[in-house]
Length: 314
Length: 326
Image (cartoon, rainbow over all chains, first blue to last red; front, side, top):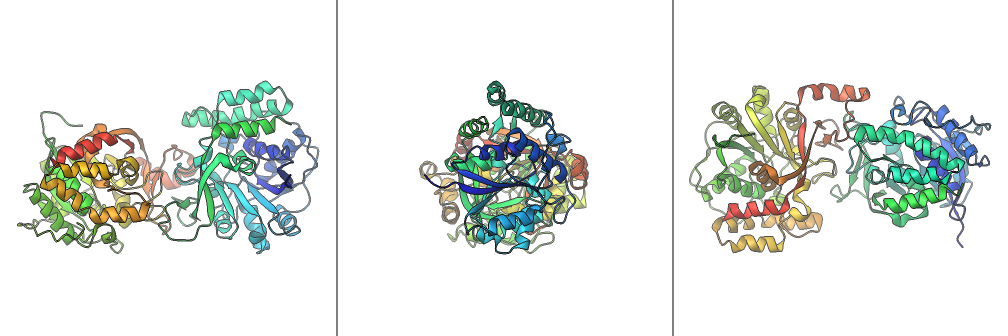
């Protein structure tokens, strides 16, 4: 039996983020979750931190430390996504207020400490949010990128139109400079773009699996994801909202659910029109060295089976 | 779009190289349109070479359509050509003899404006960079109201580019011109380069079938694309001839060949070098969000939505090509 992989989740919890790290927490054979670090994104960092604590208390896993991180992007004003996730980021179900507080350390410092205190190649960063904390950690510790086993992140888009502007996916758009810094860091990066997540829709049939489980976790996420879904359904006419962030956990548990290519990716930082666009050189026409594996397809049935099966172990 | 009683009139703006030549043949041989003028722009090759190629192709078709030389370089940028893809003469360097006639003395921009006045319901197709059309629109913005349909071969809607990861050649060469055209209010139908990939590529069987037609036009259509065929294989690892301009022409001639289409706001990137010439498509209709107003509101007010073709009737396109070469 192999030793579990050590991971840190850097996240701006809306419900899909919480599914991602809770599914990891109930997968101790494969994954050891060292910490949850939070950042401003879907909602301000006070709320993302609170949501992380709430989700851990729901799962009775208050042993997992939560570190609060950056309250704003590196250079730009924070843009949030209350239009999708509601004012709290966790609208749709009233979870009790958390009883625990976050740790005292700043999330980027905690990332540096947790990664550098372990052997090289021991820790994988799972990034579900704007990459501000990761960029700050890399700025503080230049050896961080090489010391990581890798970064698996949900962000960007290739052939899918952007979801916050026509050209950009939300996480990269909120902090394009941070994303650019991470992609030029030399870290081993696996990028899961909208091309994958827009294939992974929470249909009514899939939601029903959560509801009919009848467990506190199943019921809570049934309502939270149901709230999410309303936006995508009314806005795009899709049969359900995408379960974006849990793709990161699914990739760690079962990479063969995905297919992709090792290519060069660059993040647009200079133009307002295309700000945050992830320019993926799929055909290697620019001749620059590959810096990320971009996953383009997902077995969405296999994905939901895996993730909901894990989530309902709670 | 047009009435059966009045013949459809068409102006073709082209940077005539190998795939443009095939598109010209399709239009000049078509019973459904009357080509009133061909205007030449710098792109694949220099504007002079493009004019020579268009005149040669017209002569092969027995056509006396007027050919007008236009812009010799993009509005602001240096010209970037694609001889590596089309050959030094744009027609794979087989030493085709010059045509017996020369281009008209009227500049392409004047010819576009004149045609828009003398042919009500004029349709326009662009097969190259949009420099000529942008210049015409700058000279007379009301041109946009006199063109009933503008088919543009160009762009990479929601997909990778062919000249950079972010852009398609025709738009990338003169992004400022493209920005002007897309913001002009013209009724644009966009045929992106991706429609000419995969099954739409002429494979060995298709090529054999075309050659078996045994006509000089069929022979020319394949032979003038020999450099393009090897460049395409180098670029994509796939064998065959990819024909973006003839596909755009096919959709112009037979609109039903566009099997799936939808209309969206589109803007062209001109600021960044990384995303230069990117055709940014608001496919998920997010630009109505207040937060996008500073970048999108004025465009969305002035410009018509662009009809983007997502899926091509591949069998229909190949059948039309063969009919054109008989």
